[in-house]
Image (cartoon, rainbow, N blue to C red; front, side, top):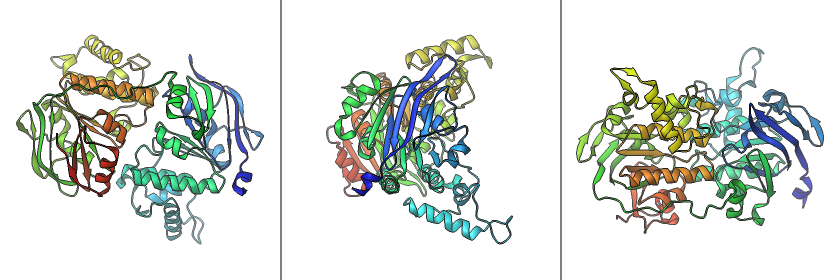
Length: 509
């Protein structure tokens, strides 16, 4: 009863509107949230979620409307102002300084001083950073290590620790789980429960509806910049929420698959990379989608990097169409017919300050050139055809990629590899950070590519994606291949048990 009494309206945003040029990002949105609750904000890419929380965080100024904190009208004109009011954000794209240590990133701007005021007390700084890291449940992070040497999931937790350090009243979490394994996600949820008990309001943005239903007290849906409604998870169903988000039901999220060929495109024989994985053997046939599942750190991405020539294996062989290949670089892999969509599209897949036209062209300028001279007319024609084929929005090929939503950025990366005319396409987390409707579009694209005869290696942390899209599901754990299941044999329980080390099973075809 005490916790219930402590809950009170902490935040109210009234009549919030914002436009960018001719695009209306938000239309008179009314939103309220209580202290000590997890309030999820969901919607398709471009629905206005990020704009709404950026206005709250002071990064963007609204054209109309007002913000009330504890019933008092409050002007928030900068992120610094928001921080002083106790509002902190955990961003989807990290705001860390890579060459600084974990301690320096967490305490940036608030380093403890020694006896001489201009001198940093490093023992005290490391002690404080260690306390915060332990508070969020990640005692295995070395606070003296540079952030650039951490895994992506560890960097995400440093981003969270940085926000927690100031003891916020309102914590905005924008796709915090996108790079976390199930074990790490459990730690995150435990932290969120602790923060709720301290009356912190958590605004939780996620495309993963399963976790929204698990963690949220209330869910607010935005569509096309307008508020659709606010519901309680226990009073609604996933299908109804999807209908609120996209305006239609998605009865068939995963497309129907046709039979694959028996002609093998890719064969790995005893592939190994010292310190990462060993003795990996499997094949991908023409028109086949192979799902590769495993917890973060299992070695699945490292296997993909070796196939793509980004890393060099220390043992075993790679065969493409029966011929041994030894790609020394991604350029060599592309020449051999291997393409790879990386798990981090911002860092490895796109040049944000280039246009859609130039990003789509990056892997295949020779297709658009003659005697080393770029044919701009042919380039525009080829890029426009892919933009139309993949329904990239808006379909303006000279628009900068950084202005697109996450789902459309992912489609730009896919368009780049489609122009490369690969025989084998490696997809590492292809739907990370995209909404449910865009996911369905990407699934249909993958299905069409497989139906055209391309071999697909699909790496994903989402079990429904692996089960729904794969002809066969492979499981890795601690650098070893520990499970091989046909589509008929694969279940969520079996794959999770394999990944966690409960069972090892090889089902085959």
